[in-house]
Image (cartoon, rainbow, N blue to C red; front, side):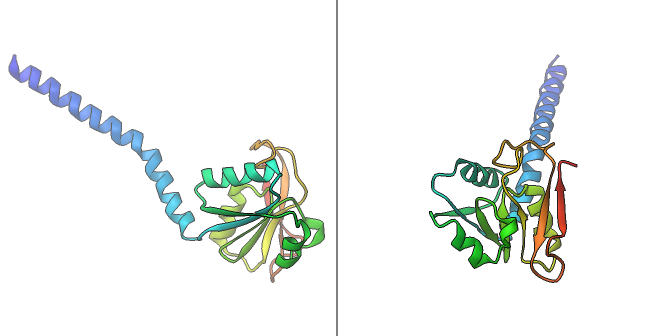
Length: 164
């Protein structure tokens, strides 16, 4: 009878270990994405101190694994002009990361594409405040364009289409 009990105990221990390893796999994959994101440094976001949707976008960026520093300002125009964001692409907040400008409620899949592909552009923007974009309801099925600007490969070109 002891061999059966021992075998049962061993089987239970192995099953528990395999179960724990399986549960950890999504976290390990997530940890790998954090390493990749961390390589791009800290994202700096300039926003209004009273804008709830900007605060929501920053919270989502942190959830996605980005390290984010914010600067609150009532000067809506200055940071956009300083960054060279074309007026027709303005949105509520302006961010910079790893040499790129990120204007408005850019989805994090577009941001990841930007940082991975590293096109010769100044940045990307989601003009205005489209409903369903991150910080504006965060609906993955919402459809809107992310526009590239500046550099050799841009100026009004659609960089990413959300919701497709």
